[in-house]
Image (cartoon, rainbow, N blue to C red; front, side, top):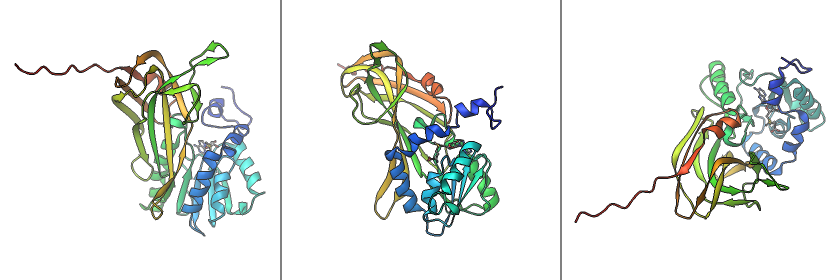
Length: 303
Ligand SMILES: C[S@@+](CC[C@H](N)C(=O)[O-])C[C@H]1O[C@@H](n2cnc3c(N)ncnc32)[C@H](O)[C@@H]1O
């Protein structure tokens, strides 16, 4: 097996590990950064203790350190842990953050914490290990520190899909590839149905490890149904006093369908999906079954 300079199996780098030179995408993504910054400001108590799992460049720990007395920032990738330490040293209150190079699957902070931040989120909860890490964390933490759990940030994740007609023409080259795009209007995408939610995760409660849906969706607009768009909205914090939530709507994952269907308003489309949290994207794609729902004939009245 080929190994990286830090003696990690290469598959780890290409899978869950995100090399430093991709982190700028996350750092400059305002749709992600601003709600995290606001949610952390709202949820971290002044003088509190915070744990971040999957710290990357350390930016979310830095936000937390503006209020907290102590932050543990756990990052498994040694190169990133070193980079985070270097960046934090150049930022205000970076000295309040202890970067720990460890696997978040088995790390327990030495003291109880008020808030746990974990951003190992991927659209549709495939690929990244948010679910596994937070399930393991809760078990390990309660074994060491007792039953009272900290606040989780994000608090919840809502997942849904919608029927799409998407152009897969790239400079004349037809290539129906999975892609990510803004969830709103898109010139090459025609939305054919309302979004349908299929799973909700509350991180403070029992976290599901498998997502399944089997049902029918009503077509709203005519078109060629050739893709499903997966929507993932993270509720970073609920501000009960203000009666609002701070949310981060991720990019939409567009998965092309092998057999397009011509659909009209009022048609019913039967959809089935089932996949494990953190699985490769292909598992979700392979699980998809999309077909015209059997038309129910109106019952004849008895003469
Ligand atoms: C999506 S990035 C987010 C980074 C950072 N929290 C931010 O918001 O910019 C997820 C990070 O989790 C790290 N990671 C993945 N699996 C991990 C594990 N088992 N233990 C610790 N860190 C992990 C990755 O190396 C990556 O830096």
